Length: 145
Image (cartoon, rainbow, N blue to C red; front, side, top):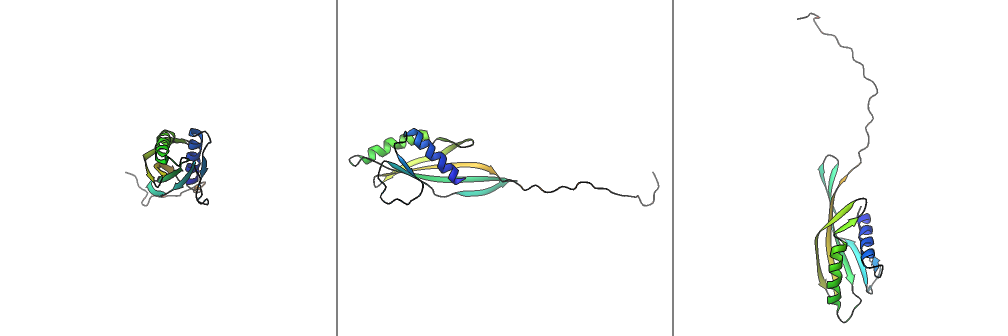
């Protein structure tokens, strides 16, 4: 499910920025050249809730590497505002709402944090049922009331 959420984040960012920014999901590239995004899931967690339902919590960090060398902080603040609206809801099979959206700029790189929490159902393996059951019962003493 984490990869599906990363894909949905990627599609939302691509739509918001008209495909002008590269989007990376693996940290293979050294010295990423801006403008580009790097998406990573920080701390996925799953907790049994009730029956076959599970609470899933995923925190994501999306880093933005700005193009501007003269005013990277200004560019990062503008991008963060656009990310707020683009990542409030992402579309998968259903809409997921991003919560706890916040950002900080560290060394000229925007670090944007968002949580996507949802409930999932685990598919249960069907248990074979008995086809037919017969009983033979007798009352001891056989009398009536």
